[in-house]
Amino acid sequence: MIHEIAVLPVHSTQIEPFKQAFAEVVHLLQRAKGYHGHLFTQGIESPETFNLIVRWASLEDHTPGFEASDDHQTFMAGLEQYFSQEPTVYHIQEVVFTNGNQQAQASAFNIAEPKA
View 1 (tube, rainbow, N blue to C red):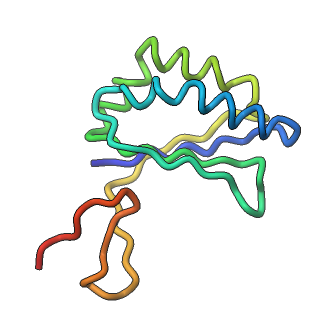
View 2 (cartoon, rainbow, N blue to C red; view 1 turned 135 degrees about the horizontal axis):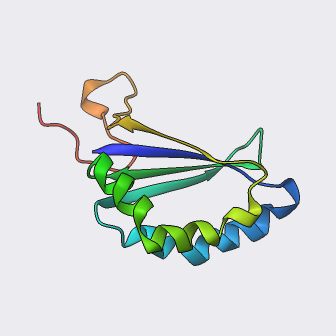
């Protein structure tokens, strides 16, 4: 599993319309091959910056997979008018968050804890 992290800078006057537009196109992402969930968050200190973190089965499912699809073209067409600059996209390996207690590990996407 990998995570795509997209940093989405939005015009400060377009925050609410952007949220609505995302809600209208997110189904295109959710039906993509290899999609395993997403987290869509708005910055606290910078409310005009959104982060979209998508969990993919493989890098290839995201790129070229989803990125080369008609669904991706439609997805982006529904959002691009709200961007104040070009989004930044990068990928990371599967992550596990921990509170320091090995018994309390869990990922950001509620993956079952590893068996001891």
